Image (cartoon, rainbow, N blue to C red; front, side, top):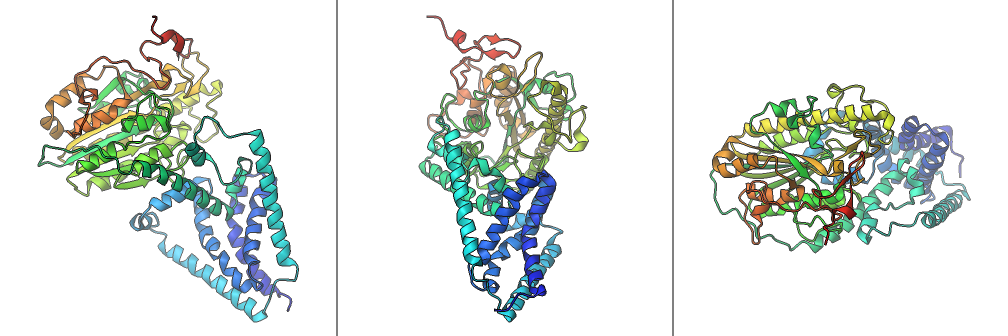
Length: 579
């Protein structure tokens, strides 16, 4: 066996550095050298060495590294644009993206990608030819050494996982499905491995595969469910129904509802926008609030998944082409209960590569997607838009030109738990509301141009605490009045008002009535004149209002519960009726 000359060693080094190139950008992002060496370069290098050691002659096993070399430029693109490594969220988006969307996404990069692929293939071919001509093989003890290091590393991870499991046992309140959706293939103590390219690709794919299998099993349980829904009146005109699921949008922060700041100037200037000023959500968590909003799931149900399908399937049964567009995430314990219903749609698109954890794409991409859908000129369309809205970090929800209220903390780290940053949080939150006004009014303008029976209903999933008054709480999940009060808007086209004048008039008459978001399911079907057995049309926002208790998920009557302290916490014990 000959010694490896410098040219062969140099070519091999180029391939290794190419495969590890994303790691050097990770170091520039996070800057912790010890963590980078321990959880980044070391495991990544070990993966490459393990692949190369699978054959005595590296000229053969070298090609096992080709996928990682070809994907390295894409990983660098993802890191530089979104500040995070490829994860299960990205894998799910890739799985939902068809060839036409991918072509549009890569528009303008075609020749650059082709050139990069050709150069990488040329590098591998040249390296293989040099190694074959030299008949170079691994030194005698090199391969067993790599295997031993791999076993030791796996044992170290396994041992630390055992220690972590003892110190932090699984949440007993979560059922098996929730645990399957929230757990990662590696221990939580080694989350930094998810920044180790190419190891993160293997971990992300495995996590995506496990969660998809769990969701498929849950979906199987409701596969044969049917509402028996139909639209008995055959209309000659085109129909477009839009449901916008807002995120963390408070009614008292809308200019439409009398807020002193101009947070909704465009919506306020539009004719026909009806704002429901007294809407509450029974849940303060998206994963539980949204299924109640779009299905017949009881507000008091503690189950993570519901055995029935959502309004999406009811519209499909009535002959509608259905779309679900989202800037939230398709996977994870916080998102899968929503994604399961999203999968009922004919077309599902997740348009934000990073979900809520980074700035990513703004909600205006939803408006652009709606424009493409209505251009299809289909006779009957349902479009559901699941937004990021005003989800923390608020300053990440709008572009720089919408930084109206200052200082907002945009471009810096702002803690939602530090009351000293109250003004920054409130300014950024109001900016996010103003951005919602911008893109949502754009959607309404699109609908106005269609000469169709059109309806748009927006309801937020839950509210938010913003250090109100002297309250020391922010965020949601604190059982305060601010957790449950949500914004709700409706708009109907001229054609809708002509076709259904009584419904339009009743929506306007009900604008100050007390409602809950659990009535959205019934409202959407009633607005579209969709019928099904055991229908409860009286629960629609377009029906004459009937007084009913507004019970929250915890059993509290929202309207009767006393408000305690500056944070207006709802008192459960005192809200119970006296016998």
